[in-house]
Image (cartoon, rainbow, N blue to C red):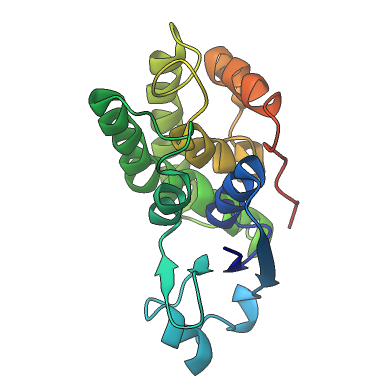
Amino acid sequence: MSYTVHGTSTSGNCHKVRMALDILRLPCEWREVDILQGETRTPEFLAMNPNGKVPVLAIDGTTFLAESNAILWFLAEGTPLVPSDRLARAQVLQWLFFEQYSHEPAIAVARFIRCFLKKPDDPRLPELARRGDRALAVMERHLSDRSYFAGDTLTIADLALFAYTHKAADGGFVLENYPAVSAWLARCRGAPGVTEMPTP
């Protein structure tokens, strides 16, 4: 089966999907979407995802899947990127939820304000910095005595968190303050198919 992804290359939510496709060697056509030009608000895009956000995975001409971590699960279930052990699978979900609820809303939004909107003095940034550092501290504690987030090998939990963490400096975060996170990023970068996200 060949998929089509409607996504934005400089979005971490899209980049995590690209990495999963690359790691799993799944055929895919990438269709770039310019979110700043309103391309997610067109009738054609909203027919695929009424929420008007990237990424969207086109499974066939009439079946579409939105939400990046749902796409990751769909692509990776039954592969080594999703553990077979019941508890380990739940731990993958735990970190996917953490990424979308505690991590992405701070680190990705700070990056968007600084790099896409070009507003380094935006009044939202101090609170985003506080919340982002709190999320990084949670990751630091978890990684202090383990190599990956769920189990002993790379999973979609790592891909989800790698996407915006490896570009956290774009949002003003100092990764050198988090040595365990930095070591984990290096391990992830060593895995085939894990790539750097383009700079906006």
